[in-house]
Image (cartoon, rainbow, N blue to C red):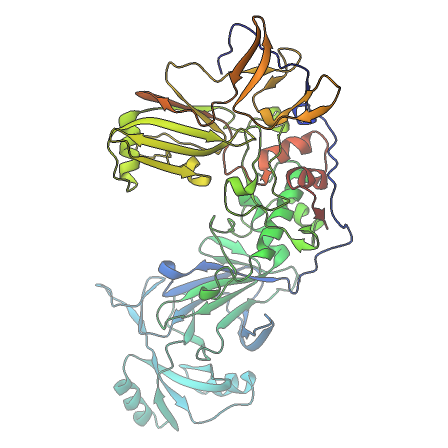
Length: 567
């Protein structure tokens, strides 16, 4: 910001500790004995679902040898019903599936192909155990064990129609029935072949789960799926009788090991990684069954937390998870609704000023630590013409004419709170909280409001007034950081007025602090800001900076989350 020629000094001001580096923060905290204990530590992560459902899904052992087939009950306990020594398997929806190369299709392609038919001949014998069915299947070259509605059977052959299965039943002299399974059925084949290894059909009562088996080393299995390695088991469900929803069923700590590398640089200080691990674990524990309609807790995308398995995991990120295992962020014994983001640009924000209801532990704090690291978004600025703003609003569905003014309001922390746009017809459109930060985000123009921390001014118009405390080194851009000493010696925090009386070289003047609520009329508007993200909760770059200054993960979390317990 451009400084005015006359230095303005706030009368009798005491700068708050947050503007000084190296301060020890001691939040009041709550009952430290209230440690959260989860009911279970198994989470279900949606990998492919909805529009991304698959007709076929491959698995390949990275660490491990073969697989156990089974299902998870309502308590997330695994029940085995079969197994295979094959290290590369593919789960297919029970359909006529066409194989070309190593890829399976549910419609015949215009090329030569092999077929995995969905009609079979099932022996008229119900077996007592999988092992019995597997032995009986060896009497046929094309038979396989099947688990249908809680019982073990043997199915023979692979046919594309009921008529073909009926013919085979007679011609092969088999004591059985021609059949096809329900629309919930999953067929397992050796990858790249039409050889069926196993079939699972429990209707809507249970879904096929595949648990990788450890190899002779005894090391925890890791399995390749779609170019990513994962811990844990995989669950396959045909929710509507069509394609397959794929879910990774994994221990909480192994899940967090697959989150941290994609949410924070694994080369960052260990204490920052620990803080991130506890945030991610708390976030996940509070959001069990977020995607209940799809049959899992959390998805793998930024909709929840980015989760891409173990590919990018490093020694530091794994160690951070292991050394904080079972630790959560709580307030009065309850899990906190935690948030984190890249960088705050100088101050976080009260959650109700960005999202919805206020929470006592999501209070805005002034952050002096980010100044010591390169966040990549320390300062950014874009100039918008009135026509560009008009076009942006129109492209987002707002029927406005040319925008002629903008009225910004700011929070006590100095972050944006609302933007009111007025057009040439006098109509207004107001966007508040998070919407205020995103409404001018435009890929078409390559102009972005990266965070909640920005200001608006007309091009060529004066910058917001800069205030100093005691010297020209302590800049007071946020009035919320200011206390005044009265004539009687009492100390009182200022109540965030629109104007303030200051002592300047010309005497006492009344000036605007950040122009909150002032209407700006211009042909071109300058949006200047810092930070990257929604500004609620923990700044990741702030955590990095604090760790580099020797603070531990509890101090980091207690700084960004007010009055919480870590444990």
